[in-house]
Image (cartoon, rainbow, N blue to C red; front, side, top):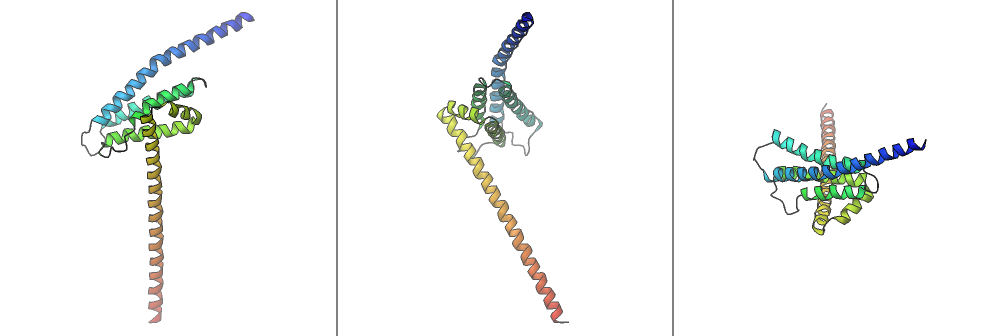
Length: 192
């Protein structure tokens, strides 16, 4: 019975070693792919009215790379996960556009939005690891992340306020329309 137990332990250790080797080889490749593709997407501005097929493929490459790193974080043990989340964050935060990038191309903004949405999801999925990852970021990257999140929240609040204002204007318009119809009805019966 002991030989069966030692065999399964040896197989388990072998699988762990293979997983570590895979992560050591896969993570740098994925990180490099994301960074290179994002740089290409941000730098190229074809001036077309909508995203081209190449743009969509480029965005898919970036998104799949981020999802691969996120999958590795999910699959990693709890002791390794903070490091994987830090790698994911240090790869994704540079994709965020600086606040003063008002003239950034639409492609760069698409990359920014993709990165920000994935970072927000990561923070929700792994809150303590996310905090650890934020602590590991340089001051410039941490500031960029905090600013991007703050801007996103402000934009959402502005959108909600505009929606509420539109709904209120619509309700006021409908109320005026009802009052106008009542006045017309009273007027038409007054002459009868």
